[in-house]
Length: 291
Length: 120
Image (tube, each protein chain N blue to C red):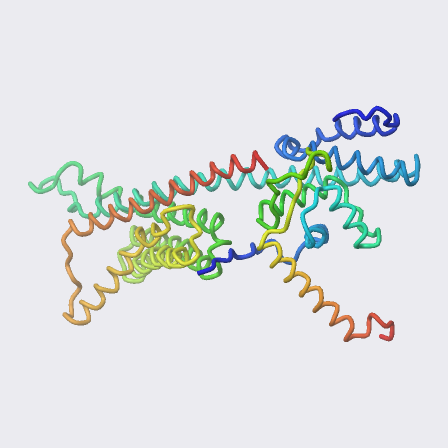
């Protein structure tokens, strides 16, 4: 702060004390606004001295002290929340990537025949595949729900009520599906199967519907078609299969290569979304530091 | 097609500080101290913001997109070139109108209940 040649001692002292007092704010806030705050305070001091002398300055100081304590606390709290949010966005970015991978690997493990040491068709890897199928699927579904929660928190506000509702549906359905998968692992029964199957369908449907809202409002920083690309095929497959079942009277058998291709496409979409969330969290890091 | 970005949910209803700052910026760009003086004048001296409240609110409103920092500074000969000037964004104007309408509705209720003429 420049010293005005004829500035009263009280003014110089006050600005110096206030400059020292600014240390109570978080460093990012101080770097961004410390200088204009000091300038405004100096202007206020000049006005108070001009209008009411020492009494005015004392009154200004009492108000400023209260203001400083209150707003410094607010800024520290806000900073803490922002830091936690950024960490969660990064974490949920990873959750989308690894969730998609785990679900795909779980499905792949499920394609292996039941291990039988006396069968010529069984391979040693089948023993591990059988054991890992449900844990991988449960982990994948839950990770995807964490990822959807990250998308909800980061883009939900801009995505509007329809987008938020879709992501909420997706996140919740993932948990329902995971519970169904756990139930299936314990006892192979229809209710558990329906819970798992339709839970997963609604999880991906939620992502697809968020993608529709996203195409309209363009809330992602880029690649706005990704949520639809990652999610659409699961609900589409279910609808097509149900139609075929109604027409033919039996569940349609699809080649494994078709599934593999679709899972891979979905994984690519989810990995892209995860990458977006992470890079956006890093952008926020920089923005928060700059603000 | 014109695209208007939605007003963030956490903006409305506004804090008194945010509403007063937006109101102060409604008739043109201003720097921090000028905003403070205008708020004080508009509220007949009832609201006296400290620098922390002022810049804490400015930070929040910049992040929400309600205000923008002006790139052009006035002539240094006319004003201190270190001052930062702020102006309302399109979203800020819409949010200010919505908040003013909300307050107007509240005042209408108060008027309907004869709060203002002291007859209730």
